[in-house]
Length: 606
Ligand code: AGP
Image (tube, rainbow, N blue to C red):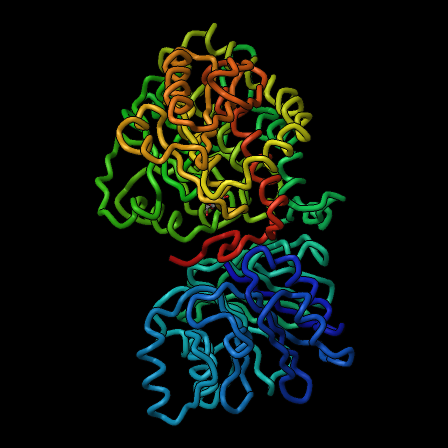
């Protein structure tokens, strides 16, 4: 949430900052700004998109040191003044910040009592004033930043420059990511490697409680109590091409279309045909330890949570170990009972979602064993967990999660296979699942070929103010994810219910203006689902059935038929048409598909 970029080196900082912000815009996009040091601080910031900022930056905006920010508002409305960077009253110090300063009101009152005059409503501006005061009492900028941060309660990833030291930028992290990019006689920093890969693939991740001073010829890192830390640079696998739209109109369509390949990457090297098991070396669990877990608890937020519901179902079905999923944002606040014989699994595409990270930290604090299913290598959640599975789905830029969702479900299928085969899943069933997993990429390809048919359905149904999504058992998380995708990017109201619950309340909503998308796989619950369709039709409701067969016209007026896999794996395939349905509904309604209103890609605040 929000994007930070910083540069120090021989080139002009402004174009590098603007390019970096463009890459980070998916993290927040209500306002943006940059500041460059050159005989004082030169600042430009605007409400709106990075393109609006670029138009406002004059051609002669020279200087080899600068910081920039793209914002998702927390304190104060989106506006020019609330946009970052924030300066102190004397315009000496400039700060960009991701996160939330929880004691900002208190600090602001103290600073105002001491003569500070604030320009914005933001929590960040207190940092600029605090550092500006501290810098007069200390020998270095890093000391001033450390001193200021000691009075701060909350989360931050910050970058700070001082007009009187135009050769350096100081960055610090506590709960909000900062990555340093190592160049040739130039240094970069950002909240996300997306902003760096055009310039360097050598990066260093700051840990919580760490700071760094970057100068053109190098950097050093240290802790809040000034202990020097040593860091090993990592090489990022992804290059700038992974962050382009690749000729597609939207990132979302590109990411939906990539799924045959991304699912294949999640599976690569992880299926063992000798014993029909999954190879998951990163779990760091012996078979003995795996057998000892009596329960699996899965946590994640939003779509990650829904993929966790698919995962829980897979684990229970294949291993008969009880499993359930819960929103991490709820779990962390309810003083959870942490059991030594429960395996906890945290899911996050970004690896930075604050609620999920906080839940993992709470689990670790209580001695829980936590695995991560994460897409972003080296991210905070990945580093916090005891082991896990990387998705290898490549960067997901569009705010709505698609390829990470399917890859997470596939990773769960592998984990469930692993659990199953150390328990009582037979070799024959292990083989059946392995073969089913291998069929997924081609079957996804076949579903994608129905794009035009699904687009026509989307145009038809998007005119309704509201839609119901229903599914039973394996189909229910699919329905929830379908409703989530639709509301998130098209703003059409959507509700998801277990089909079995319709009669207990929501059936009252059904009528000609409330169509239902029904997830109806060919499984042991088919007849029950068809009965539900009859009940909806009897109340005048339209039905779009997503399943494995063309329905009787009396039960559904429209259908999307997907290829059949093994019943346990079918939810993965049933999700794909719902992604396309939401995408085309959003396009038909003229929505900003990749950057839906009020949302941001990774939610790094509470
Ligand atoms: C998905 O479409 C949403 N944008 C959102 O629910 C997302 O899945 C959630 O915020 C979790 O993100 P994470 O996977 O990066 O932790």
